[in-house]
Amino acid sequence: MKARNLLLIGYVVFLMLPLYWLLNMSFKTNEEILGAFTLFPQDFTLDNYRVILTDASWYMGYVNSMIYVTLNTLISLTVALPAAYAFSRYTFVGDKHLFFWLLTNRMAPPAVFLLPFFQLYSSIGLFDTHIAVALAHCLFNVPLSVWILEGFMAGVPKEIDETAFLDGYSFPRFFLTIFIPLIRSGIGVTAFFCFMFSWVELLLARTLTSVDAKPIAAVMTRTVSASGMDWGVLAAAGTLTILPGALVIWFVRNHIAKGFALGRV
Image (tube, rainbow, N blue to C red; front, side):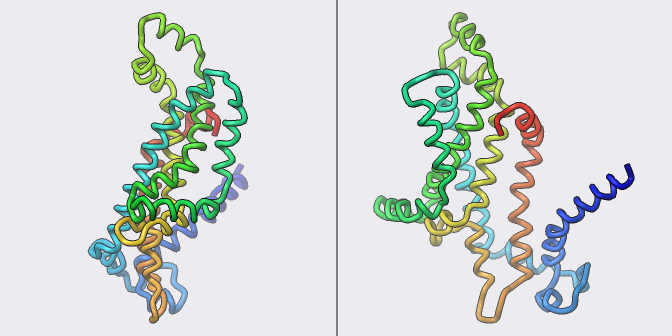
């Protein structure tokens, strides 16, 4: 038992080491980072975080990322919920082929769709807008959402639908007040994956924006200059980039646990 505990502790330490080192670097000056090896900041400083929190070109990157990620999550769930319900409750010609085709969109690399999106958005005036990135990410998140939600909905007995309709419920009322609460764990899991995939995606987000909607991942490339890499600011930006995902996991942790246990994840 002790050997197992030691192995588990060692594994956790191994996983947390990069995060600790990132946090450790964020409180150091560039001179200390590039100098001698130190486990703790010898010259503790908050200047790296001060640069990010006081420079609009930095903190607006986080704002832009949160805007298009939130939009994408809402759009993906709004589209995927009725689509997943149709796949779970009805049989129609080509339903399995269509379902598989949705998944193939998630399998394709973003670079495949980069040029069409860029040309389309430039033509209709959506380039460098939050909705442009949100819609582009729907190409990958909507199929994933449909796939996850269909697994949860298939686990809800069809008799519940029939009973509600016999009691006089309209479909919108039944869907919003009865059915959605039954699959709230699945919605939590789906929202988590949509948020995370959209948050970490860089290629589309960087290419489809330039100034007004530039995400934090693209802003972080500003640390490269003729004088070298600003490692401290980059580490601070990386630390702050982890926080939104950690907060999302904290708020939906119960739904995620139930989702992994009950649904198709």
